[in-house]
Image (tube, rainbow, N blue to C red; front, side):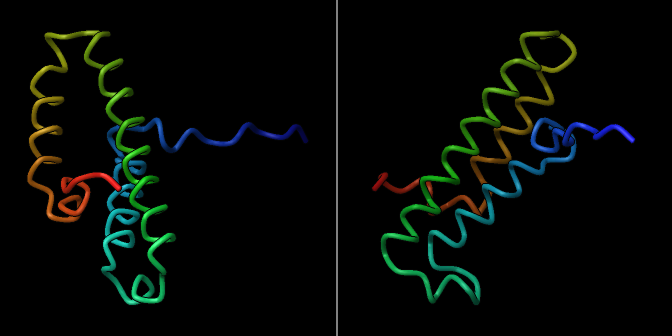
Length: 98
């Protein structure tokens, strides 16, 4: 039986897996959650950097989607970015970068 290639879960913008992972990383990086309290300063910083990286990748994917058909995707992209700006899970990433 041939091996199947791994699924591209992160690229499924509709499912939001990468964005959800970024939200979880941001929360851990800001010291929220039961496990996050055990993280040291360096580890929390690493999780905040990871969250920002995943959000940059998500933004790049949304940019590709918008470029493919602006008329079709403009409103969806605007709604997504507006949601990010007010998402309380991402609030700690809006503070000055470390």
